[in-house]
Amino acid sequence: MTRKNIQTRSKSSNDSKQNNDTQSLIEEEEFLIQHSGEIPEVAFYNSLYYLQEDPEGPKLSLTEKDLMVLKVAVIERYKKIILRDLTPENRQKRIYRGIKRSHINYTRLKNFAQREGFDITSLTEEIKDAFLAFLKRELEDCLEDPSKTSINCSYDELLEFSKELGLSKDELPSGIEAICPKT
Image 1 (cartoon, rainbow, N blue to C red):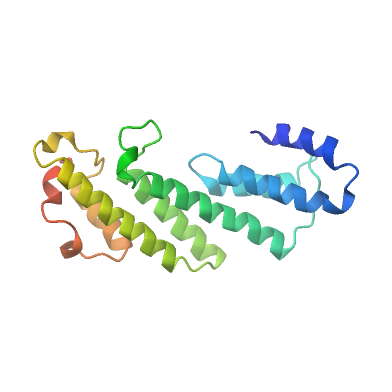
Image 2 (image 1 turned 60 degrees about the horizontal axis):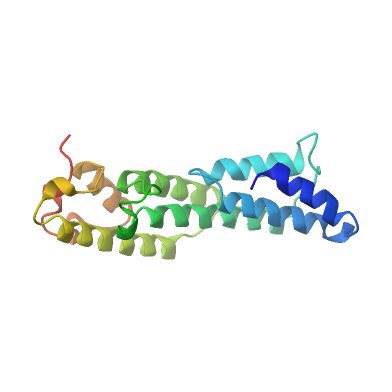
């Protein structure tokens, strides 16, 4: 759904509800962020521009509460796409981007959270658990034929991601290096 579709819907359905306009617009932008592409932070800044500065936008003065709703949507979207790529059942689907993309998105998430003052410790734990489960499953599935791996990063890149998640090399499944592509 595009902002234009939502904007048209908003104009026709919210004209009589002036008091709810701001809340409705924030909810619509939250929806757009949560269903954005691979970089939810870009959607966040697009939403801020549209809501506050766009000549065709509503030119709102956003409260901290409004901003928080949109920032949380960014974090939720990052969570969704990171975990998507750490879900073994997604490996053969078009939506799958791999560990390399999970690492990139985790780094983006971490930077956004630091800039905006969010504590993502519990989310990092969830991602770490998904990462380890993914590696274990991948190793099991590739025991007979390591060339069938869906791991799309080098062992060094995998170690870098694991370190960012707070894992040591010793915590990774034994033998994982053998199914990582050589660079």
